[in-house]
Length: 593
Ligand code: AGP
Image (spheres, rainbow, N blue to C red):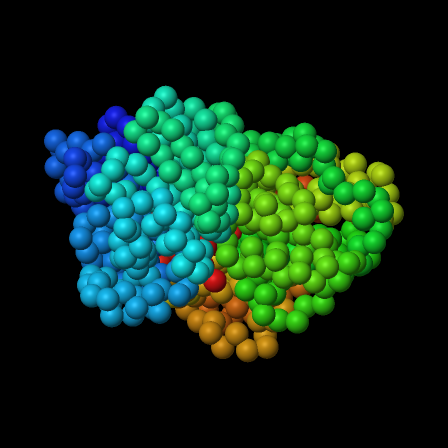
């Protein structure tokens, strides 16, 4: 996933660089801008983050229009040559692109046979050369014919040397247009526009936009026919206050409030929003996602087994697409995605829909590709999550899924009104329990000092605590780079015990009082082999360092017991001087399969 931005208006260079800084959560291995001034386009680009790029751009540069890009490499190594923007051979067109041009090689060979000289290993560069090859005086015609020749997913913003317009092309990858007076903006994420634009519009798929220095914007389909697009006033979307600290810690500390917001938001737009008739037809539920989103589905499925008498199956999206999971008109699939832009999850939604299933998006934004690909949609109301490692979104996904599944269980009669109301009411006490856990974060910081040099960290849990172990392990490895795995505790003795030795840390999660003895024996097995054990639990364990959490409703433990693990990952990574908000080799959302 990459971040793209373009604008016509005053202070364009500085505004573009500021917007790119805010888009860095989408990718940050290289960055660049193209500044159009008079009849020429100047390119400034390099490997590294936006802050380094800003230092290389002359302070006195003024541009009528500027386009910019911050990259997460998919095709071509991280280098200055592979950084966007790309300019066509005769310097007439410069482009920034987010997505994948799937037919870039065939286009590249054809263009090279006509004399085009490429300077990068990327797929995106082909767009600049194709525009120039298609240009014979009518720029809009060149843009629409180029759009028709591209295959794959693409959000492209184009500046030209021969007029003052900006052009954009959109298919599958997100692209938002913003206007304010005679200024026009294009951006990958609506939240990066809220400080500039007064009105915004989500560009529909298979459209081209043309914006002029007057502030006008017109939209066309790929055949050049005018298309009308509705603008709406940009709400008070979470602005990017230039926060100096770590977004990850800020977002962990926001969890109690965001969980209250998730519950409020759930009921504010009607709750489940499925008729009893549709609910009674459901015989199978899938919970589909990737990474942290998948882990929230894994946990929600464990909770559903205590509420519903039908199959509720968590499935990794990239597996669902290519495996033969049964789907028919009695199937309901929840597609879980913080960004709503993860390619595997979007593709999984399309597969469910193609085979007669009902799709329900659970996302953290109200304008996303996934939302429009599904029959129904629910916003988890976590507000902007900018640290690449997802934290508050996990807790809010879990609460939203729990409320959705509890409504289904109640409508199906598998839980009574009393249990149903208890689940809903227990969300409020959950927030209070998380606040008290966060108050003990100094204890977690101390533990981080003790385990930061572990050779490996294993996370263990049984039944509903295993998904929490999986999320804790993902959080630790993705920002500290320490090897980590998660196991159902009982599985350890079937092979992985071989890895237990001095220097290994084990983090056990034990929230079920009925399984205390089982967890004690799992802990004893690893302690005798030299491992150091931390246990997140409301209960005591003599051979482990216990991080105490309050007792909450059994359906709420998952959203609570993960919080010490989120903090532990954060503090360990800080002790190791990692970039906690932008860790290596990671993207906030992977918009390519
Ligand atoms: C989160 O910590 C991870 N960086 C990543 O696994 C993420 O959860 C996954 O890519 C799914 O993203 P989504 O929720 O936006 O679809």
